[in-house]
Amino acid sequence: MRRKCFALLLAIALLLLSGCGFEYLQSEQAEMPETALQVSFLDVGQADAALVFCEGEYMLIDGGNVDDGPYVVTSLQERGVQSLAYVVNSHCDEDHCGGLTDVLEAFDAAHVFSSTTAYSTRAFTNFAAAAQAQRTPIEIPSPGDTFRLGSAEVTMLGPLRDYGNNNENSIVLRIDYGETSFLFTGDIGLTAEDELVESGVELHATVLKVAHHGSAGSSGYVFLREVMPEYGVISVGAGNDYGHPTDAALSRLRDADVTLYRTDLQGTVTAVSDGKTVSFVTERSADESDINPTILDRASSYIGNVNSKVFHRDDCGSLPSEKNRVVFDSYQDALDAGYTPHKSCLG
Image (cartoon, rainbow, N blue to C red; front, side, top):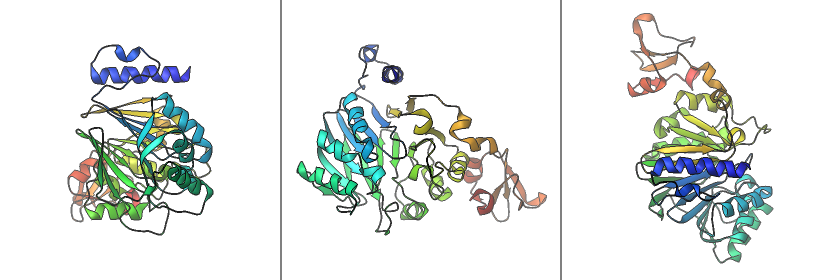
């Protein structure tokens, strides 16, 4: 019943985007209009898995934990997948590569990308063996590599170097479709984020797959100012032991005016782009205050120092004197005016 309701909601969203009549309501699994990109952030708990579809071609980015494999395979089958143009393993931790063994045993893949070709865990070893078994050896992409998924363009942005850390070594990729874009960040942290910004690559995106399940060590202000996402999706498990998503990450996303979706509260989250706008369908509904509890702490205004060009929350203990103040209605207004966030209250 839940799958039928979700399919119906998805069909309605596609109908509104396409304006192509009621043919999309005729089957339980709604078909995509020819001119649409669909990204389904699968509900794999404390893990990552996202299926991207464009014009008859599919790409899977990560596959959840080992135990998620059967669910991911079933989810792909329900969405009509018969083969995969690309499989991307962002990095070698089990919660990203574990379920890919089952996927590669169920579907042929033309290309398999990963941040490394060898890692000592059973989860990664089995994934690599499954790729080899279908004679699709793992490829390590380089920053700047591009390929097409239908008419969407995929660009590999990172990792920029070997960080000596699985999370920071995550593959970072950008999908451009018309005027919309999606940025996938694996589990990168502040170091990789800041170096991506410094590299000058195009990071601005409509939708951000929030890094590392909303950990405190990701989604920094510097990175968010460059990406400027309208929407963010956090793939995270309910009641996880890590406290993800953290208030630190949520508050930074709040200050950047990002509309959030979370798989722990909303189930599988599906984003549909018509090339101009992106709409979302979720399996379950959730209140905004539950998705991001820190919205209750949002500053009513931001105070800038006209001398230092630094701006603060209105409740910061280091506000400038009255004569040196300028008031901004929003965080973004302060950034647009060329002001920098105060590290103590906004960092």
